[in-house]
Amino acid sequence: MSKNPSVIDGAKAMVADFMYQPQAASFKNVTFYSNGTSMKNKVIGHVCGEVFTFKDGSPYKYKRFIVQVAASKQGSCVYSFPLFDFEGEIMSENDFQKIWGDSCE
Image (cartoon, rainbow, N blue to C red):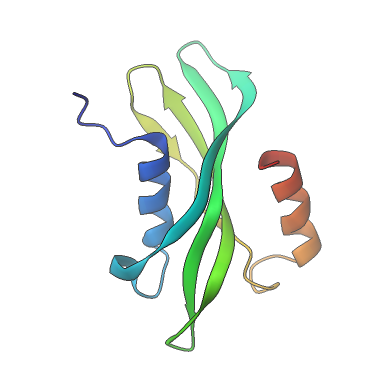
C-alpha cells in the first residue's frame, strides 16, 4: 500500500490550506482530468471540484476550484496553487470560466 496520498486527496489538502477553516473543508464533485500531456515519467492534468466556503466568517456556499497536478508513475505529485471561483475577487469570472472550460469539462 502506498503512503502517498491520491492525486485527488493531495489536491483537496492544497485547497483546504487556503480555506478560512481548513479542518471544516467539505468537497463535492472532485475529479482528475488528464490533459493528455505527459513527460517521461509524469502525467499532467487538473483536479477540479467544489469546496464549501465561508464569507465574513459565516458559512457561505460551495465554490469551484482548479489545481494543476503533475503526477509521477511512482505516486508522488506536484501541485499548483489552487485557482478559486470567488466571484471576481481573485480573477474575473470570465477568466475563471475559460480556464474551467478548458481544464475541467
